[in-house]
Image (spheres, one colour):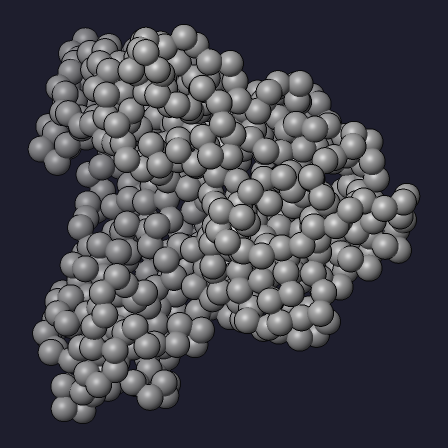
Length: 215
Length: 395
């Protein structure tokens, strides 16, 4: 289940939406963080020499939030990634999608019927396309996006389907999603658009947090 | 685990066998390729619309569906079709202005596309509306099918009613010279906000999220309306400079050194809740509550003067009329209420010291004044009211 704060804002901008916001993400509550007292830029973890430390970012994920966060923070560049930075202009949002493949649709339907016909003795076999999307946003505007995709065939009982806490991914799919974290970390930390934002932050809010660590 | 969650995989399976679809076309409407060059305008927000539905782990992307329909279906009717505004200049003989709207007013999801067709001289040649229901449980497939059929309906109608060809509608226009203000939806602005003059050359300051992706922007003050154009912006600070090209006698000056005193009185001026409240500016009073924003925010201070949607970009001034900040956000009361907490007047403004840095970086002139005496409401009103405008963003 997606975290409550996903795609919603604890802070809301104050422009009046005049047109029908038919496709705006639904507003959902966010966890409360006591206002202020915190500094504008969060404390910085010690980074190894010559490692580009990215600026503080709020982290949100639709699945395996703690696991993905942990995997990302294993990269020193993401030392300032934090679930609780509700006011941060930068955010890293991870969403996942599970849809049957074109070929798997008919087979999956037949399998579901067979499984139902045997009251669940036979498992339901599905062939799905899994997509995980990493999107860095700056005050609601997309800075950069990375996708990872794969297809997966799995058998599951109709009685336990959807109750394994994997957001429809299955255990194998969940492990795959976690495995994408290291790969995307390597890409994001070199992303030119994000590095340009880091430079702008450095201009307005100069601090070692956003600079390349010196030897 | 709830029942819907248990049956979700089965629902996804069943939904996926319902009309699947890549920009579908109807067999009853003939596809005839026409060599007339056409320019197609669709509001950019309609082509980028998307939302994530957490309960089904799915991105719903109606914007992509409509963009794909234009590319896959529209170009079958008019291969020489150019989307505007675009990165490259192109010639055109006709302009097709489309405004897709997704709704479920009657309980049934529906796509309605109002359209108008213009010649190169700006004369309207045709208008109409195409409606398509969104069928099936797979919303992306349904949106793709509805988009394809609507685009097909419109393009076929253009061909039937106008019988275009390159000699009847020669490609004598260039897309870069099209007056987009004639094509935007004037019935309702995409969003509204507030802006204020920051110098006497007629340049205004507002929040970047108000002016973002606007095709046309208009400012209103004292019954007068004038066009403004973007000059510079920072998504990081959520600030933008607009240019009216209208020199004026006054502007709001920044406080020298931009120091803010905790607890000092402030006045907020804005044009909130357009359509509900009148068109006159709304003035509220409060104090500087804290020198920082919520955790992780950058360059914000907290103030207590009440603000509403539409206040974004409004000036926060001292009792001497100096600019202390610009209103940008507030705590989401609804979200916090669901957690059992009701915040009161917790609002945030971009600190004027960062406004000054931004203006200097962008080489935008501004004035600074020394704080003098206790000041009062009249001085604050004088500075803010005369220099604040309502801003409407159209697509």
